[in-house]
Length: 187
Image (cartoon, rainbow, N blue to C red; front, side, top):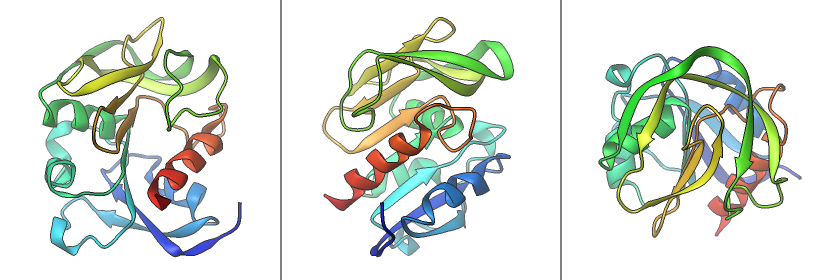
């Protein structure tokens, strides 16, 4: 994929250790920057937004505002997915498996974000916290043996969440998932 200078996808820094890797994973393909999660929604000028991971929901700044107010595709990764869940009425609980580990994900519905990915693949994920109750207006796209909601999407808006980290080398098909998100931002 070539570098598209007409597109801009911003990565929201939620203080996670991999947020800079998300930016690095897409910077060869689109204009990107890492922004503070305190940035006012009206200051965000982008074709898409990625809510990065982080330690706690309490330190997520204005992310709920981005999810409610911005009319652009948004991908939530790990904590970003959990923020999506709580913002729209879902529930997040402590997972059964804290710390990062290999998790085999099973795709239940290919959809846009998981397009072209195999039925099962290995990911690198933390399940310190996880979405346990699907928010209203969302559907489950993937599951695993440690989490029933590994990936989800909104039924009418371009909002996508994955529990795993597509930006790390330990995750199979991470670049493909990010390419799918970039393609969604071009629509």
